[in-house]
Length: 560
Image: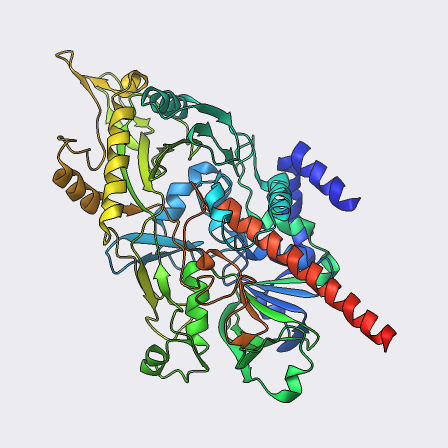
């Protein structure tokens, strides 16, 4: 009953709920890591309070004692995270000390960012919310009824119908003119054609993220430590003695996780240990953080671990392999008139599914000034940039992740190998041609400037589309030259390679990975909905299985 009331509050009064949770409720269980004891026991230790970690922790806390460890601070520490206007300043400020977005540059030379705040990348992103494409669930033994219930649970707190204005409307009409049909209206489903997706920014423009899902937690069962950097998973060899006592050991296990070591802001170390009654360590640190922590703990390719002087605990060669980023190419134009910040709302999904078209408008995070001969003062002008982008939906190019140091605070070294597979260039070329068709539509006319001779045209900011769209070589050159990220990287701990279908790490008991590092493909136009769903999904499965096991043991004792 209490949960139903909370859900109704989210739907009817989202702004009040957000302020209430951020300002009062979370103080009951969110603390700075410096306030935690030197050693403490929990049923579940979740590493990474991000897109998957928050819903997983909230779910498991319904029945078990949970510790959620987040290396960053709370969103309330950073004003730029609250609204859409703060998106660009946050992403551009990635190199600042303790910023909520930690920047990194891949070995390909493309700048990127990862979340470093409670809520993870769901607290710094563009806010687009859309479920996975149906093909994402074709393999893996998903319980689709639970998948849908998990999506609905997430959406009750973080998904809102956006108000579509100016640029997003023009792009919608341009996509339909480019024959990206049918028009599906507003929907959270992944459907071929043009649609308006949900947003994690509510009607008042306030951001919601996976942090809001912590409102569903059982507060007496959960503790959240911020500014807590996990440095190592504690492992011990599997022995006959502890094999019989653990519910979750499996035959292939050579090591068993029994806790983690984390460091607080003041440099002091803490140990969090799991109880020997089926407890687990679960990594939700993302596509960079989870494989990195496995490597730092001695789980990964033995040769790479030895290079860094890390004693190999378990040789697992596929850790850090098959890391993928969805490449993006885009064109940006200066708007002749002011636009509101409107991050991704309109999406075009062509029948081929090889490239998705998305759009955004931003107010530049600085002011330009125009001197007027008629006024003694300078007039401030807010410059508005409108962007149209094409995302390669399912790139075949695969990269690798390796340690760059043995300090968990540092970024690992990652190479995505953009366009190393010819099929990816073909998908990018299709996306470029779709961009050109949209830009040529009548709906784009209001965004052209007219010079004194009556000629009209766009004022581009950055690269222009290739002049000859029939020249595959010219388009390929444009794709390589203009490639940027859309922050949808994934892989590094793939299902079937590093973890099994229950997300258990091969060869190590009491250890799972539950985040986008387990994905072999991006689940749709934007992965955050599915990553949040995954946290809820796995949490419910764990609770159900532990209940079933407890009932089975009770029946055995009764029969004996």
